[in-house]
Amino acid sequence: MSGLVIGIVCAGFGVLASLTDGQGISEEPPAWTQAVIHKVRTPLSESLSLPIDGAPLRIVHRREGAARLDIKAHATTEEIVVRLEGDGWDSPSPLGRRTLEQNLAHELAHHRQFQAGPTEGEPLWWHEGTAEAMALGALVRSRVWTAGLASEWRDKARMQCVGALGRGTLDDLWAGGDRDAIYACSYLMVEAAAEASGMTVLRLRRGATRAMASGTALSDYLEKVAGKDMARSLHAFAGRSYVHVDGAWVIEQLQQGEL
Ligand SMILES: [Zn+2]
Image (tube, rainbow, N blue to C red; front, side, top):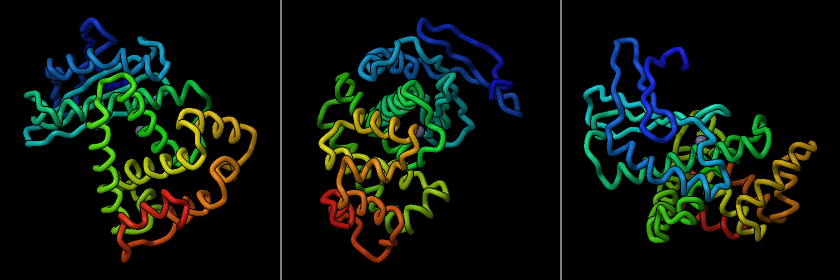
């Protein structure tokens, strides 16, 4: 990845770099996307207790012609990279802005995770589900999002997870890289576990990181703090096939620890 960096532009916040691909395409991220990130990065970082200039941030844009509004952000321990793809980013839109805010919050949440301890070896659903939940919490606490927007986002996650449950077991979908299963269903699992434990996601995650560092399995930790019923339901939700069952009902059963 770093071998592809061809230029660095300072925009008054963090570091922005443009990137080139094999065909020599290199584009500056549209100014409005930079403005959105500039506006929300500090409040989001603060609400995640992250140093404001902690993680170098790169925004990359590849238009590549197609009418798309895609985003592929990722975080390493060193930096956050937000890759915008498609010409849908050329002009501002509410959907584009929300997508940027949510993705940035998600990647900042990963940085918070990295700072709290090693994340290698933790299950994918736990890694991504806690990042989604931490991101949503940060978006609301920082008032970047209203409670109404957060609740719309939750409804969308439920719908996406219902769709995923109709495609196969989560274990299989996670292994196959199914995004709805990885993000939406995992988020719902984390939310259910936090609810059952009576802890915030941040506290639940802190406890789990400590437990895993001392050799306790995540499932054992969750059974201890969220109870046997929730632990069993999380296990069933991940491994059983609900292809022929109403997904909305399955999610409700999970939330009540009745799977
Ligand atoms: Zn992630």
